[in-house]
Image 1 (cartoon, rainbow, N blue to C red):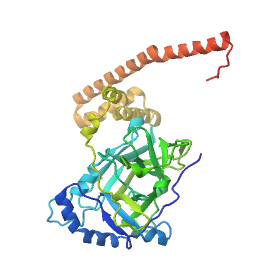
Image 2 (image 1 turned 45 degrees about the vertical axis):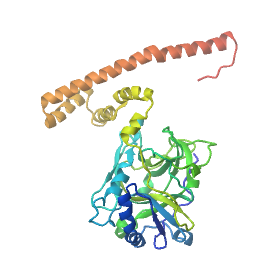
Image 3 (image 1 turned 180 degrees about the vertical axis):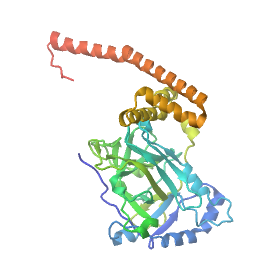
Image 4 (image 1 turned 30 degrees about the vertical axis):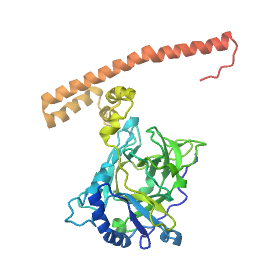
Length: 403
């Protein structure tokens, strides 16, 4: 399979970097933020970064960057009431997008870590039914103007372990208002820490726009146009996956599932040449309530059914049943009794029996529903399709491709 990894990955120190903060949404906050620019520039000038290779002059000079989502508020004056407002806004701008939408059971979240200079994107990525997890911004009210920028920039560090190469790290962007499965995506590597001293250092990842490919899931859309950011960016996201970006669906050999913790310090854009300002500001996103209201009526009607039949709880119960029956050797009845005992310890026997009965009723309804769908829809379609193929081949003498 053909895979696409970024041609340009660099980790640049910020001693010669121009820092252009994004425009804050709140006027009072913006005024206070400007008063602290000197402190912010000093912070970025003294920050050290882990480097996977020697930094060239092109990486460390004439670089202009602007922060769009800032998760570090340590430079704010403690007397300022809204000292954590920037970080809070940044964290709340993101939503979860895990493999639960595809029947998986991975669980992650982007959360604030009070008192720290970062936000934590962490959780558990499982390969049972899925194998990916992610976080993305809520839709921007207006497209993010990135004219003059050469790519996306992230300050981050992997705190959970020292095996970043055993996962595929990706960043995604949308150039329109669609919410479909096709997005522009690029993979980026994270360097391994060389010693314990580097545990607290930050990695600066630069992903040029030219590295992004239009994908559907993990597969590249062949012949798709290159990323054109002149019309603005409508959404930014990150994902961790077992799938390599390529023409065919290919899994990363030796993928490491389980817990991870990627700490994010800032997300922004950069220009390789010096510039007074990139003109990028913190985007105003829709609220989750507004996103739900904007959903098509058909989706609003179907979503409750989808949640009933394909909810995370259902997938987790199936996964637990497989583990108990296949790996622990329990019968199905034995696994059910084990579940009753476990719930009884936490909620009491009566509540456990009631919960088990409700699960049984829901699963029974689901089984009946799918049986009806197969009998009334799938099987008739197969019969009609087979009849049409038979008539074409035997009666009309037409060549019919075997399925």
